[in-house]
Amino acid sequence: MFELNGFLQQQRDQDLYRTRKICEGKQRPEQVCDGKPLLSFCSNDYLGLAADARIVKSCQQATEQYGVGSGAAHLINGHTTAHHALEEELAAFTGRERALLFSTGYMANLGVVSALLDRKDVVIADKLVHASLIDAAKLSGARLLRYQHADMQSLQTHLENNTDTKKIIMTDGVFSMDGDLAPLPDIINQVGKNNSALMLDDAHGFGVLGQRGAGCVEHFDCNDDVDILVGTLGKAFGTFGAFVVGSDALIETLIQSARSYVFTTAMPAAIAEATRTSLKILQAASDRREKLQSLIQQFRIGAKQLGLTLMNTATPIQPVLVGSADKAVAMSQGLAAQGILVSAIRPPTVPDGTARLRITFSATHTEKQVEKLLGALESLQ
Ligand SMILES: *Cc1c(COP(=O)(O)O)cnc(C)c1O
Image 1 (cartoon, rainbow, N blue to C red):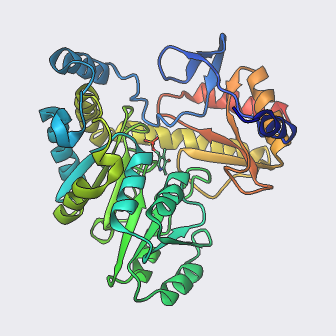
Image 2 (cartoon, rainbow, N blue to C red):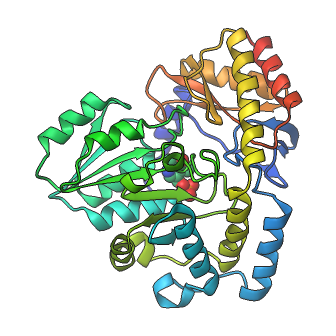
């Protein structure tokens, strides 16, 4: 085996060394991690569905019915009535012709872009899109061009330079590290129909935005103008996996040639059944969405009074900008000492000099817990 310790030491020296906490029990705001009780503000379980008793029950019942493993890929004999029903329900929920399940969001993105583009083509991506979209573009072999974050002038320049090329324009709906929304109506205005497809990864928008929780396209009322829509099931849905929705031709193309779909085992049927229950709950969860909004507003008002630097966004992702990686780590450790779990996000996940605390909220947090967080942040100033 070749030498690895040089790299590891370098990560330590730069305060970039990552470690995992070992957490017990269900995903919820009050958890025991590394043997210590902690109040967490770092989960993507925005609606508090990850441990919902109704969803757990569906999963249990379906496990009895289908067993645990799906045993094969979808194209062999791993595609069950449960998967199929979920796909139909996701298509109806999103108002699309078809939906296709993937085992993770990462794999969905890899599969879509590499199935649709090759070396002759172009990807035009917002500078801050999720890592999986960048990896997807690279895997496809297409030329990757990035426009300045949410900057329509910069997008237009790339579009004008590539009018005749087949291309995918891609953006996150809610940006995972900044928590802001893509200016979708403006992007749609810019992107012509010719030779281009607009791809939206709304991992953090589904369940949170829109009356029915249908995410950014519902929020902006622009469902018809997004050609390829990706959602993940491991965030607000509280289960696991991902889906792509779009036209019949798009989904058929992915079934034929998305390698991360074809060459992998289908998600367990019980997860699909659990997600069917989750989808019903999520659509009707206006009360949870309202509760989430009120917690977010409570936090923002309190944080501004403390003079903290927030981003201009009302999503459950509320970054507090601190600057250097070591300061972000020190603050995260200071919060941990008071029993509060907030992740420090450092380069290379975010650009140099923009290290931050990434605070996320769930509808299952209480006002008291938000007060506790604000109090702890105040004590660290
Ligand atoms: C979480 C996330 C993914 C990856 O989804 P997984 O199901 O966790 O693999 C993709 N895109 C965005 C924007 C995400 O936030």
